[in-house]
Amino acid sequence: MPHCSNRLSGVALLAACALAASAAQAGAGECRAATAEQTNVLVELFTSEGCNSCPPADRWLSALDLGSAGKAQIVPVAWHVDYWDYIGWKDRFAQAAFSERQHRLAQIRRDRVVYTPQVLVQGQDFRRWAHGGFQAVVGQISARPARARIVLAIAAESHGGVQTEVSAELLEKTALASPSDYALVLAVTANGFTTRVRSGENAGRTLAHDHVAFGWRGPTRFGPDGKLTLHERLARPTAAPGGSGVAAFVQSMRTGEVLQALMLSECRG
Image (cartoon, rainbow, N blue to C red; front, side):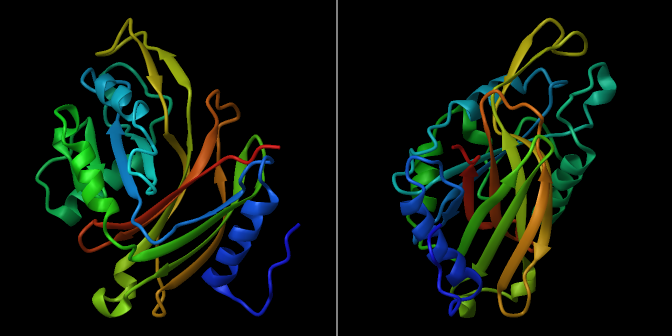
Protein backbone atom coordinates (compact mmCIF):
# COMPACT_ATOMS: atom_id res chain seq x y z
CA MET A 1 0.00 0.00 0.00
CA PRO A 2 1.26 3.53 -0.73
CA HIS A 3 2.35 5.63 2.23
CA CYS A 4 0.48 8.90 2.89
CA SER A 5 1.96 11.42 5.32
CA ASN A 6 -0.11 12.00 8.47
CA ARG A 7 1.01 15.62 8.44
CA LEU A 8 -1.79 16.26 5.93
CA SER A 9 -5.46 16.23 6.83
CA GLY A 10 -8.93 16.23 5.30
CA VAL A 11 -9.13 16.82 1.53
CA ALA A 12 -5.38 17.32 1.21
CA LEU A 13 -4.65 13.91 2.75
CA LEU A 14 -7.21 12.10 0.62
CA ALA A 15 -5.97 13.86 -2.51
CA ALA A 16 -2.37 12.84 -1.79
CA CYS A 17 -3.47 9.28 -1.15
CA ALA A 18 -5.51 9.31 -4.36
CA LEU A 19 -2.45 10.21 -6.42
CA ALA A 20 -0.36 7.55 -4.71
CA ALA A 21 -3.09 4.96 -5.07
CA SER A 22 -3.47 5.73 -8.76
CA ALA A 23 0.14 4.77 -9.37
CA ALA A 24 0.11 1.80 -7.00
CA GLN A 25 -3.14 0.31 -8.29
CA ALA A 26 -2.60 0.65 -12.03
CA GLY A 27 -3.92 -2.54 -13.58
CA ALA A 28 -5.60 -3.54 -10.32
CA GLY A 29 -8.59 -1.18 -10.60
CA GLU A 30 -9.07 2.32 -9.22
CA CYS A 31 -10.56 2.48 -5.73
CA ARG A 32 -9.98 6.18 -5.25
CA ALA A 33 -10.47 9.25 -7.42
CA ALA A 34 -10.20 13.02 -7.07
CA THR A 35 -11.51 15.95 -9.08
CA ALA A 36 -9.06 18.17 -10.94
CA GLU A 37 -9.05 21.86 -11.82
CA GLN A 38 -11.87 21.68 -14.38
CA THR A 39 -15.59 21.35 -13.62
CA ASN A 40 -17.14 17.93 -14.21
CA VAL A 41 -20.69 17.70 -15.54
CA LEU A 42 -23.56 16.08 -13.61
CA VAL A 43 -26.37 14.72 -15.81
CA GLU A 44 -29.47 13.57 -13.93
CA LEU A 45 -32.49 11.81 -15.41
CA PHE A 46 -35.79 11.48 -13.55
CA THR A 47 -37.50 8.53 -15.19
CA SER A 48 -39.93 5.63 -14.69
CA GLU A 49 -40.70 2.28 -16.28
CA GLY A 50 -44.37 3.29 -16.09
CA CYS A 51 -43.88 6.33 -18.37
CA ASN A 52 -44.18 5.63 -22.11
CA SER A 53 -42.16 8.74 -23.06
CA CYS A 54 -39.21 7.74 -20.84
CA PRO A 55 -37.49 4.95 -22.85
CA PRO A 56 -35.95 7.40 -25.39
CA ALA A 57 -34.46 9.39 -22.50
CA ASP A 58 -33.17 6.18 -20.90
CA ARG A 59 -31.44 5.29 -24.17
CA TRP A 60 -30.03 8.81 -24.49
CA LEU A 61 -28.49 8.59 -21.02
CA SER A 62 -27.02 5.15 -21.75
CA ALA A 63 -25.46 6.42 -24.98
CA LEU A 64 -23.66 9.40 -23.44
CA ASP A 65 -19.94 9.55 -24.13
CA LEU A 66 -18.69 9.95 -20.57
CA GLY A 67 -15.40 11.30 -21.87
CA SER A 68 -16.89 13.72 -24.39
CA ALA A 69 -16.00 16.76 -22.29
CA GLY A 70 -12.28 16.28 -22.91
CA LYS A 71 -10.54 16.07 -19.56
CA ALA A 72 -13.75 16.74 -17.68
CA GLN A 73 -15.89 13.81 -16.57
CA ILE A 74 -19.60 13.39 -17.29
CA VAL A 75 -21.37 11.92 -14.25
CA PRO A 76 -24.77 10.35 -15.12
CA VAL A 77 -27.41 9.38 -12.54
CA ALA A 78 -30.87 7.96 -13.30
CA TRP A 79 -33.35 8.55 -10.47
CA HIS A 80 -36.40 6.30 -10.91
CA VAL A 81 -39.46 7.98 -9.38
CA ASP A 82 -42.42 6.14 -7.88
CA TYR A 83 -45.36 8.38 -8.77
CA TRP A 84 -46.02 6.42 -11.98
CA ASP A 85 -46.38 3.13 -10.13
CA TYR A 86 -50.12 3.59 -9.57
CA ILE A 87 -50.93 3.41 -13.30
CA GLY A 88 -50.43 -0.34 -13.60
CA TRP A 89 -46.71 -1.16 -13.43
CA LYS A 90 -44.44 -0.91 -10.38
CA ASP A 91 -40.94 0.20 -11.31
CA ARG A 92 -38.55 -2.07 -9.39
CA PHE A 93 -35.91 0.68 -9.27
CA ALA A 94 -38.22 3.45 -8.03
CA GLN A 95 -37.87 5.03 -4.60
CA ALA A 96 -40.13 7.56 -2.93
CA ALA A 97 -36.99 9.44 -1.86
CA PHE A 98 -36.12 10.04 -5.52
CA SER A 99 -39.57 11.54 -6.15
CA GLU A 100 -39.08 13.73 -3.10
CA ARG A 101 -35.71 14.85 -4.42
CA GLN A 102 -37.24 15.87 -7.74
CA HIS A 103 -39.99 17.84 -5.98
CA ARG A 104 -37.46 19.52 -3.69
CA LEU A 105 -35.29 20.62 -6.60
CA ALA A 106 -38.38 21.94 -8.39
CA GLN A 107 -39.21 24.03 -5.31
CA ILE A 108 -35.68 25.41 -5.18
CA ARG A 109 -35.84 26.42 -8.85
CA ARG A 110 -39.47 27.56 -8.47
CA ASP A 111 -40.62 25.26 -11.24
CA ARG A 112 -44.38 24.90 -11.49
CA VAL A 113 -44.42 21.18 -12.28
CA VAL A 114 -42.35 18.03 -12.11
CA TYR A 115 -42.41 15.62 -15.03
CA THR A 116 -40.77 12.61 -16.62
CA PRO A 117 -38.54 12.23 -18.40
CA GLN A 118 -36.73 15.21 -16.93
CA VAL A 119 -33.04 15.82 -17.60
CA LEU A 120 -31.05 18.13 -15.35
CA VAL A 121 -27.57 19.25 -16.36
CA GLN A 122 -25.55 20.72 -13.50
CA GLY A 123 -28.80 20.99 -11.53
CA GLN A 124 -30.70 22.97 -14.17
CA ASP A 125 -33.58 21.82 -16.37
CA PHE A 126 -32.36 20.74 -19.82
CA ARG A 127 -35.34 20.13 -22.10
CA ARG A 128 -33.28 20.07 -25.29
CA TRP A 129 -31.71 16.68 -24.60
CA ALA A 130 -33.52 15.11 -27.59
CA HIS A 131 -32.84 18.00 -29.96
CA GLY A 132 -29.09 18.61 -29.76
CA GLY A 133 -27.09 21.25 -27.99
CA PHE A 134 -25.86 18.98 -25.22
CA GLN A 135 -22.20 19.07 -26.24
CA ALA A 136 -22.23 22.86 -26.34
CA VAL A 137 -23.57 23.00 -22.78
CA VAL A 138 -21.00 20.45 -21.63
CA GLY A 139 -18.25 22.52 -23.19
CA GLN A 140 -19.40 25.66 -21.40
CA ILE A 141 -19.58 23.93 -18.02
CA SER A 142 -16.30 22.06 -18.31
CA ALA A 143 -14.48 25.28 -19.24
CA ARG A 144 -15.22 26.77 -15.82
CA PRO A 145 -12.59 26.44 -13.08
CA ALA A 146 -13.65 24.08 -10.33
CA ARG A 147 -15.42 25.71 -7.39
CA ALA A 148 -15.36 22.57 -5.22
CA ARG A 149 -12.99 19.66 -4.73
CA ILE A 150 -14.11 16.07 -4.13
CA VAL A 151 -12.04 13.02 -3.22
CA LEU A 152 -13.94 9.74 -3.25
CA ALA A 153 -12.83 6.27 -2.18
CA ILE A 154 -14.45 2.84 -2.10
CA ALA A 155 -13.12 1.20 1.05
CA ALA A 156 -14.98 -2.10 0.75
CA GLU A 157 -17.67 -3.77 -1.34
CA SER A 158 -20.11 -6.59 -0.68
CA HIS A 159 -23.26 -7.93 -2.28
CA GLY A 160 -25.35 -5.73 -0.02
CA GLY A 161 -23.43 -2.49 0.14
CA VAL A 162 -20.48 -0.24 -0.62
CA GLN A 163 -18.40 1.39 2.11
CA THR A 164 -17.42 4.83 0.86
CA GLU A 165 -15.13 7.56 2.12
CA VAL A 166 -15.56 11.05 0.72
CA SER A 167 -14.00 14.39 1.47
CA ALA A 168 -15.14 17.63 -0.12
CA GLU A 169 -14.14 21.27 0.10
CA LEU A 170 -15.63 24.49 -1.26
CA LEU A 171 -13.14 26.61 -3.19
CA GLU A 172 -13.08 30.37 -3.76
CA LYS A 173 -14.99 30.82 -0.53
CA THR A 174 -15.14 34.62 -0.83
CA ALA A 175 -17.12 34.28 -4.07
CA LEU A 176 -19.62 31.80 -2.63
CA ALA A 177 -22.59 32.23 -0.33
CA SER A 178 -22.54 30.79 3.19
CA PRO A 179 -20.93 27.30 3.20
CA SER A 180 -24.08 25.96 4.86
CA ASP A 181 -25.97 26.78 1.65
CA TYR A 182 -24.10 23.92 -0.06
CA ALA A 183 -24.43 20.18 0.39
CA LEU A 184 -22.92 16.89 -0.75
CA VAL A 185 -24.93 14.05 -2.31
CA LEU A 186 -23.70 10.45 -2.72
CA ALA A 187 -25.33 7.72 -4.79
CA VAL A 188 -24.50 4.18 -5.87
CA THR A 189 -25.33 3.66 -9.54
CA ALA A 190 -25.39 0.45 -11.55
CA ASN A 191 -25.61 -0.53 -15.22
CA GLY A 192 -26.82 -3.19 -17.59
CA PHE A 193 -30.39 -3.89 -16.44
CA THR A 194 -33.30 -5.00 -18.61
CA THR A 195 -36.97 -5.28 -17.67
CA ARG A 196 -39.78 -6.97 -19.56
CA VAL A 197 -42.76 -4.73 -18.75
CA ARG A 198 -46.04 -6.65 -18.56
CA SER A 199 -48.58 -3.90 -17.80
CA GLY A 200 -49.05 -0.15 -17.77
CA GLU A 201 -48.08 2.29 -20.52
CA ASN A 202 -45.01 0.27 -21.58
CA ALA A 203 -46.73 -3.14 -21.60
CA GLY A 204 -44.99 -5.59 -23.92
CA ARG A 205 -41.76 -3.58 -24.15
CA THR A 206 -38.31 -4.61 -22.94
CA LEU A 207 -36.58 -1.64 -21.35
CA ALA A 208 -32.85 -1.18 -20.81
CA HIS A 209 -31.39 0.88 -17.97
CA ASP A 210 -27.95 2.21 -17.04
CA HIS A 211 -26.65 4.54 -14.32
CA VAL A 212 -29.57 3.53 -12.08
CA ALA A 213 -29.45 5.04 -8.59
CA PHE A 214 -29.75 2.69 -5.62
CA GLY A 215 -28.44 3.59 -2.16
CA TRP A 216 -27.82 7.27 -1.51
CA ARG A 217 -27.09 9.84 1.20
CA GLY A 218 -27.73 13.54 1.27
CA PRO A 219 -27.98 16.33 0.90
CA THR A 220 -25.40 16.71 3.72
CA ARG A 221 -24.61 20.35 4.47
CA PHE A 222 -21.10 21.76 4.68
CA GLY A 223 -19.81 23.19 7.95
CA PRO A 224 -18.71 26.81 8.50
CA ASP A 225 -15.20 25.99 7.25
CA GLY A 226 -16.51 24.83 3.87
CA LYS A 227 -15.25 21.29 4.36
CA LEU A 228 -16.95 17.93 4.78
CA THR A 229 -15.80 14.35 5.39
CA LEU A 230 -18.14 11.37 5.36
CA HIS A 231 -17.86 7.62 5.87
CA GLU A 232 -21.01 5.98 4.51
CA ARG A 233 -22.23 2.50 3.69
CA LEU A 234 -24.54 2.70 0.68
CA ALA A 235 -26.88 -0.02 -0.56
CA ARG A 236 -26.00 -1.63 -3.86
CA PRO A 237 -27.74 -4.26 -6.03
CA THR A 238 -26.76 -7.87 -5.44
CA ALA A 239 -26.08 -8.15 -9.18
CA ALA A 240 -25.17 -5.39 -11.62
CA PRO A 241 -24.59 -6.92 -15.08
CA GLY A 242 -22.81 -3.80 -16.35
CA GLY A 243 -20.93 -2.93 -13.18
CA SER A 244 -21.55 -0.28 -10.56
CA GLY A 245 -19.98 2.83 -9.11
CA VAL A 246 -20.43 5.74 -6.74
CA ALA A 247 -21.34 9.28 -7.77
CA ALA A 248 -20.69 12.32 -5.56
CA PHE A 249 -21.60 15.93 -6.21
CA VAL A 250 -21.71 19.32 -4.47
CA GLN A 251 -24.90 21.32 -4.92
CA SER A 252 -26.32 24.68 -3.87
CA MET A 253 -29.43 24.28 -1.73
CA ARG A 254 -30.50 27.81 -2.66
CA THR A 255 -30.34 27.59 -6.46
CA GLY A 256 -29.89 23.90 -7.29
CA GLU A 257 -26.66 24.65 -9.16
CA VAL A 258 -24.05 21.87 -9.07
CA LEU A 259 -20.51 23.07 -8.40
CA GLN A 260 -18.65 19.81 -8.96
CA ALA A 261 -19.27 16.10 -9.51
CA LEU A 262 -17.25 12.88 -9.53
CA MET A 263 -17.84 9.25 -10.49
CA LEU A 264 -15.76 6.33 -9.21
CA SER A 265 -16.33 2.90 -10.77
CA GLU A 266 -16.35 -0.24 -8.66
CA CYS A 267 -13.02 -1.66 -7.58
CA ARG A 268 -11.72 -4.63 -9.53
CA GLY A 269 -8.85 -6.97 -8.94
